[in-house]
Image (cartoon, rainbow, N blue to C red):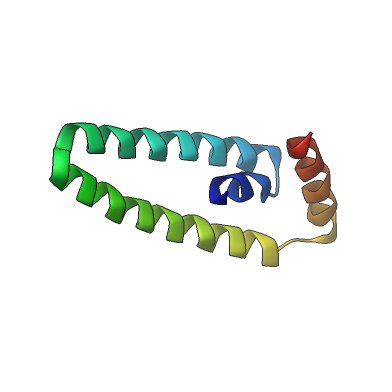
Length: 84
């Protein structure tokens, strides 16, 4: 649910693609560390997930509160496109 919201709250097409690839990269690194590291890797992956989630939440909040009027309009358009 958090990833869906993270991907829907962007200012531009460039930021949308950047966030998409960031989610792919983070997911891959977490899965690899869980598979290779066994118990220690899983513990580190949980810590990494928490850190990634906090960074993503900070980015979403700053994006939401720093929009100009044209960016707000673009945000609505991109969000509708993402939902469709």
